[in-house]
Length: 126
Image (tube, rainbow, N blue to C red; front, side, top):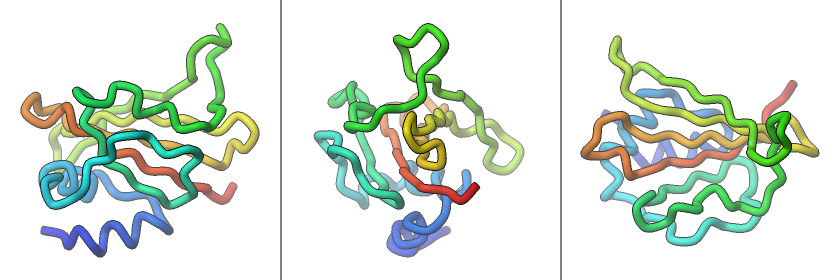
């Protein structure tokens, strides 16, 4: 088990590990769900969304790097393991003006929890 308050503090200075993200999503009742996406949240910001209530949680005011077609954000999609089991889906986006600024959106693959999304923003060194 983890202490959610410690994880929230640590998220300001580093990316959360898959097991930590899984724990937060599993225990999301302990945290506040964000109803409207903030405008240009700072590095280290962490938000929980209910995808069924807020489908547009990615509209955060930033210009993210686009795919070659220029219409859609170029997000990398990955499955992350917790233990030896695929447990999380993760979408990565990089800033258009600042490629070191990144957004990661995580949700559980388990259908009972797949509507809760954790979004973390970080400015990373090269």
